[in-house]
Length: 281
Image (cartoon, rainbow, N blue to C red; front, side, top):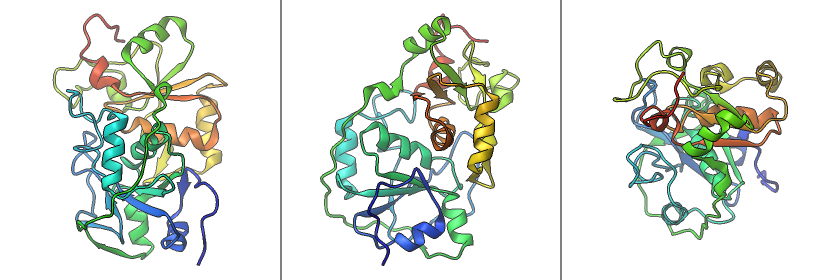
């Protein structure tokens, strides 16, 4: 049996996971969403990787008191819910979703923000796992022994609207909006009601689809070329999207090839697009 001795890489392959399924302390989390604002559909409803545990982004690992969906939960809530899933301080976590790569990077980012760095995304998710004929099973709920996970929240990993507003003038960081070009340019209405169309002034557009091919991250040389063309240089980078989910796809892609400091504007357009007196281009 192969054993995991070192910290996980940010992204792992289906072959790697198949060889490490029975490693001590390895946990697999299913971050699949039942629906999404991108309108993406999965062929893999109702099945999961063997022994995976469902990580409910929409209803559990979010802030129930925030009117904007998907916002980061408090460290106490995150800790309590992770313990219910049997997650421990020494757990090695591999997270996937049933769309290939969509919501799983959000979970990767959440764990990183909460101080747990031993976490990886399964490249290509459940579709690639299934196509390579590795074992799946019907989704099920099982009783789990509580874990001892403890969040250690890195407050600086998340930016708020006031910080983004200040950055328009200071240009200390480069804001990367990963929504589609049509949404970024305000050519189409937002999928959420009562939001303006357009983008944050001085932000640039890199649709999340451009860092993926068939649900998998592009090779590192191609990812590096993408960020080179954006002239990110050594600037701190802030990622945003509709409500903080797909931004994490590009943040993770950037993590694979760039050492820039990286932050998430969690409220993203769901917040900015409804704020009065906040500039929009």
